[in-house]
Length: 181
Ligand code: S3P
Image (cartoon, rainbow, N blue to C red):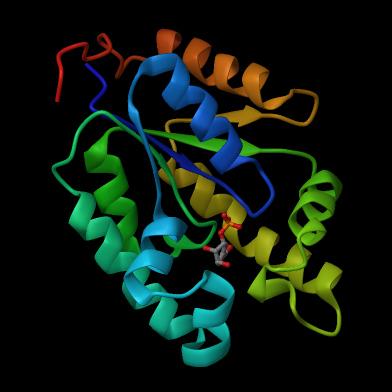
């Protein structure tokens, strides 16, 4: 059985939308680490970064993830930088299957900058910041995940289907856990 499916990947890869599709398809709960951090802090992620800095956000992000260890039947959408901490990578790997959602960098940038709310892109040169961060993380997404799905030419539903297909082929898959939580 697959206890949980975690989605990792860079800002703009569609973890939240694809995660919701996957949750609808599997009957698993949709859980988003950014939402839980915002709830814990009582303010949106952008405000946490502005008021307390990235370090404080990372501490809360780690705590939120640790609080999910042991939970089952989740589709877990993770913030793009959650995989930076080794302890988080270990937790994700223990929780279940980890899927890396990827897409063409220009498309990721276009999507990530659309909302204008991503704190790590609030720099004088957002495109350069974006590419530097992406470069520094690609190997980590790759090492942390069981497989990669390229969503460049896919919509959210098709991406969710592609993940389910990859799971069907994946050796760690046994069957979905259909028993109620
Ligand atoms: C971050 C990505 C964001 C959010 C925070 C930091 C990152 O989540 O966790 O702004 O370090 O890449 P999304 O990947 O959902 O945008």
